[in-house]
Image 1 (tube, rainbow, N blue to C red):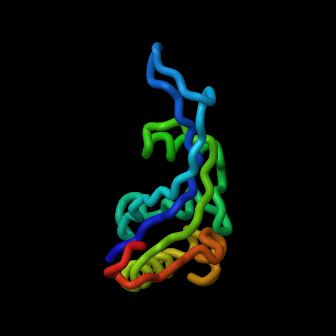
Image 2 (tube, rainbow, N blue to C red):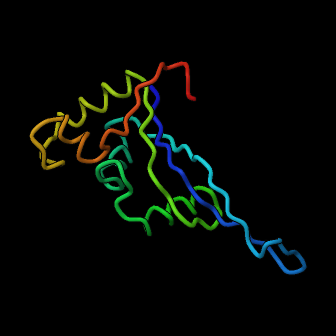
Length: 130
């Protein structure tokens, strides 16, 4: 069972110390960052509920701090791309959501998925992570 969150992150490159400089004064690059999605029902599995809204990052400042911690680089911006999961992960996610719809203030699983992930869910073959 595999799941991961994909984010587009714009990082800023800066010299680490004196005697080093960049030309131009700083450079920015955008990368796709993949963060493992905890198994449904385990610690941290509610990351999507606590961080996303309608397939977008709910709090840009918070998301930048998270990404800076993941990368150990200054982050300019973060945007959510998708939850990429195999069929087993997706089914387990839906089952965990169904077990406690009240925690999501929703009537059904589809509402929860739409509310937090929008249309940004991609179910992939378990053998491919690209």
